[in-house]
Length: 132
Image 1 (cartoon, rainbow, N blue to C red):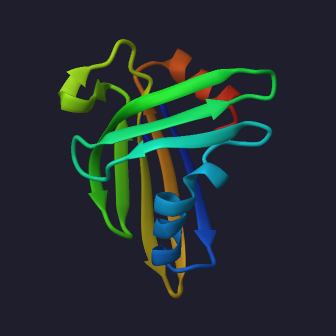
Image 2: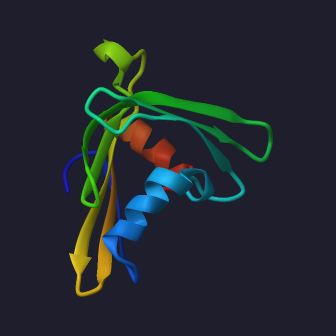
């Protein structure tokens, strides 16, 4: 694992199809740690398609995440970044490239949630938000 990367790995007692459905149909329910909540704004699962989620904190914080998908392979992998907006326009201050990988393991699925950051400060901020 290189540089400024965070990784969460979990073996889940469910098939990859169920986890893909959790991402594509129920993202609001699990995307950020409680007491924060997430609201899906846009999910266009194709390279260059819009990825937009707004997170709301317990003290009125609002954190919009706007970006694009880089790759989407059904039931296998989703890769997204906030380095670009739709139309491949560069974003102001990119935070990370994120990915979810789903690997079948004998009726269960190994899930890898990965966040690659441009610098240590962004990585530490992400850790402080509960990504661990």
